Length: 298
Image (cartoon, rainbow, N blue to C red):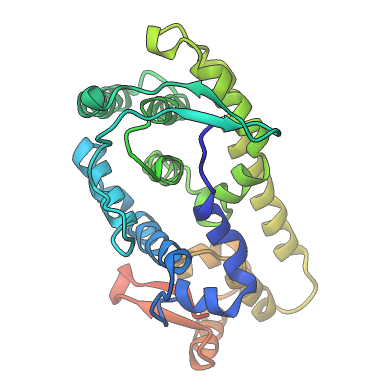
């Protein structure tokens, strides 16, 4: 439904098989073009969400700050709402363009975003509605407002991850929700298109979008279950299973998370494997004490 290039989902999907992109994601090299800059800033914003989600309030100013960070290495300026009206269009097979949806006018966008964030905070604090329903509704409203000149799709998926973390759904730490959306982008566009009809009049069908949104999460949890099941059932010693558990991690992780995957491994075995991988330069520690986290070194 939106004319985005899914650059953020490609980041997670392709960097694992490309040495140069691994170096960018691990902050070992300076980006040399626009594509690498997009990867670099996405890495930074993703890291902020992974590590500080519980300290990030849902407000219009925070949304602007995250968007600013998403553009900090790019020529285009981020951190401000759109200054011209935009449309969501589809390019047809013959090359012609078809306008699917007209988002909120630029003049009213700041007000809509303030209201969206305020109403979400109120609703989530009352605990009367299932959080996943509220998160799905927030994302749909965000996409219908389409508040920025560019980067709306990437921002919607980063905000999805942030809201999920804050409600205790952390599957995005282990499974790329971005990749699942990319793999189902035709269904994504279809659900977004159908659910946005009559949105301006408050008569849209949220259920169509929620069905897709919850389906993405269900697939993520199934993939996580399959991955964990594979690790647990793999033949070999406890040390080998701990290493495989670490290999399956995306972003930061803790020893306790690995212990949950390998509950039969003793603390001594866990420490021995961590020390070994650290000495080999495969993982590194970030922070000190009980709040210390680990990450893979690429």
